[in-house]
Length: 190
Image (tube, rainbow, N blue to C red; front, side, top):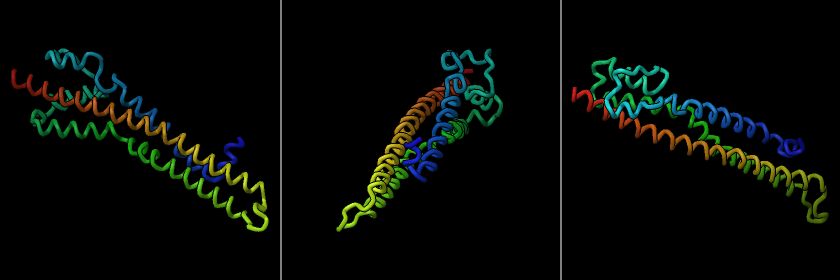
């Protein structure tokens, strides 16, 4: 509790950053899990050409891709499929900008707290008496250090999660490209 008191007003925006980062991380982790994107065996069946016998849920990316491809006549056009993929990638990336913003803002809020704390420390400095109020000195240094620590404790995991999700989306994008090529090839062969 003392740590929170020593961060002053900067605790609340840092708490908001922490809540947002945690929420987005959990939500994107659930949204980008394998079964929500490509159910087990989808890519194998896609490459082997056995997709006509299997029905995938429209909740999964695989199901939406197949529904789009088989449901619309113009969807068999390569440009339309690529546009669909870009739309889906945009859906996969939703919310990630918040993690990116938190990664940038949290250390800056911490830095602002550091500057504010050091300003209050040096504001009590008097050349004749040196430091006139030792409690102001201690609380200013505590504010400076604690806000920096808290800002970095929020930013570092946020950056790690952002990088993890971006890499996951890159892999999904490559799998989607492979799926499109396979669908178009199978459609030409039939």
